[in-house]
Image 1: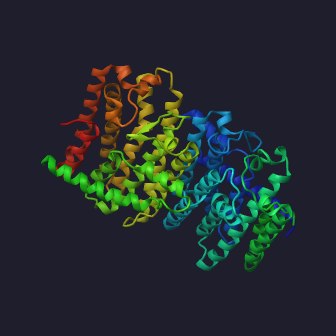
Image 2: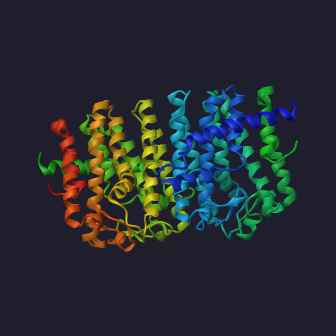
Image 3: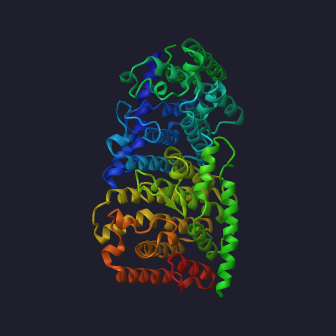
Length: 295
Length: 295
């Protein structure tokens, strides 16, 4: 496959994702207008890696893009909600996100709390309204998304992150934290896509292994970038974890070992896709993109 | 029906509700323990009016308590989540709730944000895991709960409330605010119960009229109590709306007119139940209890 094929695929999927996202969000001029505007503001920008992952996994399994719109939107809504709350003064206290003012800076803190709340609700609402899917699949997607987002998943990871401030974690504890905070939602992209594409049990097991390795590779690479890039490049405050005395993989492993661990995990992830042949070529390209590798 | 029948019914339903709630919440000693403990703390106490309303409506329609546990728990989880976030310093900034320290006082502000987030997730998770119900009903309940909780329902009402601080609202605007902030969730109790009991369309229309009148009666009565009772009696800070320069029905209508408007709405609500005969007797008793009337 030529690289141009991936770029064309990505543009096409981003276009359909943004159309589906727009339809899922209440119009900005409806009551209460300030909340609806702020919800849209919170959803603008970003690389949409989670949505792209839903499409790429689902399509590798023969799923049609039409059945993947709802899970793609739901995953990005949960991601956006978590960023809005994570940026709050009581949490990471960040002013910059996706190259712009965070929601509590652009609006106010109370509105930011409610924006996060409402974006989470919209994610579940969108799944319940998903067209073209069997009811059993819809219910399964709600269940999978809830488990991944809640206290035993992403939100639990944010709590662990909050508690770890000022502490040096052991490597296993840092991995557990990130398996919750970022890993659970990445795995959910894969699981919801597999559910929407009606994948069989064996395929789901393989993809879970792919997703677990990918999630950790992504986080380690994120720490590497945070330690080496500028805020302007990242679109969020760089070096923040170091400033907040948070444990990072770079801090625990050193830069070189962190890089090589990310590479090993990426190789493991790609290994899991070996059996999918040409159907997973887009997914392989996306995997490299997500882990910030250029082949 | 003797009043003792209602008291016995209430005790029995509260017992089964608390068992179902306990099963829906992660154990307090599991990772991340502080979050799971705080989630349980946030769910303790309260009159459980929403859960009781789910049981009473569902049973009036011939539904078995077993199909009503999941919606009863989901509604109380959404209610608890909204209280935790509403009490935050960036919102109502309240220290006292259900006679105890609010979650951000008993724990910390970041944990309180995450507790609310995770309780919302748990509500949808519980519906997706509801036993004894057709898949179509589960999906419908998720949809109804999301619409009632989100930006076009409860969360939207909280935003309107936030924006109305320091302003004197017109009566119609105050009614719209409360139709969102408290009314939507009360209506959701009724709608989820009707869905679980497989009620027909005509019955649902009648119950919607009942729920709309009940929701507003409840809020007006709440304002009346806030203006006349002490914090010790309420278990939350009394006279708070007045202090925060928030519009209330008492302020707009005066105490006597507010009381008589609540009574008229209560009569309207009970009128809607006329056709249900003896089957709705418990629901009638509960309606009086919810609106703080002793017959």
